[in-house]
Length: 234
Image (cartoon, rainbow, N blue to C red):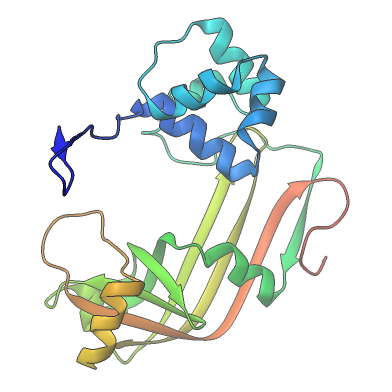
């Protein structure tokens, strides 16, 4: 329990558990209202809200209806296959490959997340994952002062982000190329810490801020057949 400034007890938010987090995340990725998912799955909206915010044991029937409502599988909702590489699903014949224009590329990577920095080292090309943020059409991430990423300052690198939907064998990929540099101005670093901090998942000290100013950005999307999304068809 915590206490408020007035001394009254205040309960900590409940841990939603893995299932609740996956249901909420999948619903958000699809842009679906909770009420619509509840209607699709034949569940009460209040129960669905509770499931997304609390650890709730559910039966196979409920899981199956939720998976159908969220266009995914029971295995995915339960976290199956998380230790295997992405993209092992069988190819879908009813999809097409399209180019994304620059605006569509930025729209897909702007929420931030995890991407890969591709750089050249003494041992050859290397791709390293980083937690990143986008600000003013640049990519920001943090690293250690003595690491490979910091040593790439002043060189040309590539940066890649992708997202896959295993259920439908669809997804997108965005690649940008540009020069990476260290953000050295202390006032800028302080502002970034307050407003755009990409929090690295790994532990350790990562207080060097890096910024990629892209010279070009390209992207592709594999999507189900139908009306075009944002982007320029091939």
